[in-house]
Image (tube, rainbow, N blue to C red; front, side, top):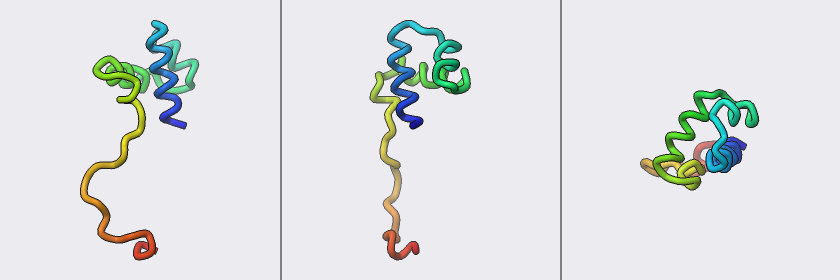
Length: 66
């Protein structure tokens, strides 16, 4: 859901929509839209997609956690 909003926001950035307008359309805060716009301007739509967590892999598997 959150990723879909960010990708939709990127489409709207490309259309030249304002941050305030996008915030209203997507029902999110204007600050979130401004943050997404900065990321989008530095990269592209793919930068707004979810990325796998980085860091050390877990030591316990799912069975051990339970």
